[in-house]
Image 1: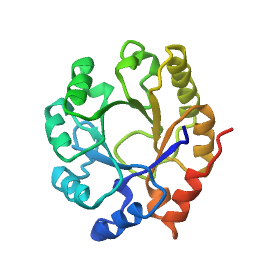
Image 2: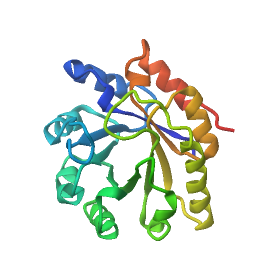
Image 3: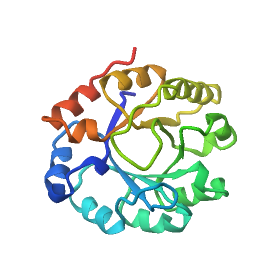
Image 4: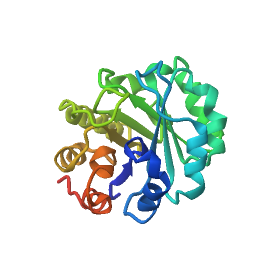
Length: 219
């Protein structure tokens, strides 16, 4: 499978949000990544369901919704109501992860689990077969434009080995500090989906950057 590109809405211009969504619609992007932050689980507040609902009305790309919040299981139905394709919840925020993952699937969405930089991939050994995707944070979640954490490449490779060993087709998504250089390293390590925020939206030609990310070769 050719790798996917998911630009992150967090880095868009919120005064010109429709313009930026239309740019995504006309680009080679595969998904649109949306980070919902509550100021509790992470030290920042981003946007909530009114913004997601507005974006969903005009975005023609599947929505990849990442809840960086406490008790994300309380909002499964609200996320599903936006038409989201993928719902990401943090391992660190879900004491009953198996129940939450299957509730996401029962609501008609793909289920993904996110790991913070300090959380080892081995903790997913017993639930990996239930997941459609694992999102590895390659920065500490909460803010955009952070520096890539180098050990994320080795972490991606370890997760890929786990997936291969179990004979699964679970996707690996990586978010944080993604650019041409780190993107190529991550793809070589086994990543399937690259999330890019400021690298895309702050570029002079975002469509061209997306095109170049899409054409990266990790071999």
